[in-house]
Amino acid sequence: MVKKIKSAIYYTGNKFRLVEQLLPLFPKNIDLFVDAFGGSGVVSLNVDSKQTWYNEFDPHTFRLYNLLRDTDPNVIINHIKERIKQFNLQKGKEKTDIGKPEYYAFRDYINQETKTNGYLSYLDAYALSYYAFCTSLRFDQKAEDNLKADVISTYGNREFNDGKSKAGKIIAHYNRLKEKNFYETTNFEIINLINKLLMNEHTLANRTFIYFDPPYLDTITTYNGGWDNEKEQHFKEMLYKLDLAGFKWGLSNIERPDLIEWANENGYTIKYLDIKYVSNGAGLKNHKEVYITNYKSE
Ligand SMILES: C[S@@+](CC[C@H](N)C(=O)[O-])C[C@H]1O[C@@H](n2cnc3c(N)ncnc32)[C@H](O)[C@@H]1O
View 1 (cartoon, rainbow, N blue to C red):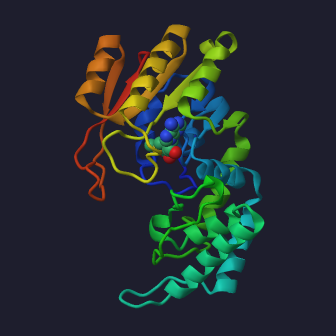
View 2: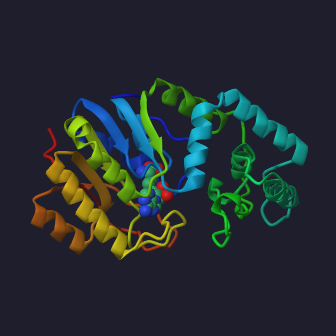
């Protein structure tokens, strides 16, 4: 097994804590690994496969992923440090406003630059995220053009540093992605991704393993992206088609009676993973995490 690393993209609900349990359940000797709901990319970062296909529908996460993959990590780290100096970014002190005005001045600058230039600097947005709440980038959902949406992340009382968990993570992420042989990096809605796989069934079916980690239906999260019953229904139909076409796939989710019934009806395999999510009240506490596959683990 490759050495387990974290992603430099912070993502609430990422699968880092489950990677050790998930990977042994994946097929052995994967030729092409498809991380279909890629997010932070932490699963594909840690999977040993000959080729990798990262897909992410959210345009901001997708662009950030490409930035971190294609930019020398020292350029990123130096950029963050320059912005820290320029805007005097700092970790605040509890019950004071220290750090806040500087943070919001940088955020205003980024949003103004986006308007002036017509595009967002992901380098700046990424730098800001180190000082943001939960280190997460949030965008104005009401914006007409998603790519020009204002960054609305609030101040987070945290900071960037040269340590292993900050600068070190950017370097490790970059180095790991350098070792990967990318087949594709796509920004598809899930149905379009599956259609593309099905269109290439003859060359791909017997050498591809697809990992699906869709948004959970009954949670209120920022990355849910409008995932609803209808979308999930359509998605499950497509999983059936992939199965018929000979693709191996695995699906992460939380245990739900309808999902278990669907898996049993279709003869899929269900494994329970051992995790207790600490959640922020979004209804995830004490849920059971399942991993459903259309193949038997070897
Ligand atoms: C549970 S997260 C994946 C987390 C990822 N496995 C990780 O460890 O970081 C679900 C992902 O699905 C993406 N997503 C939401 N709706 C989608 C859709 N209709 N098609 C494809 N991806 C979608 C979200 O942007 C989010 O990144």
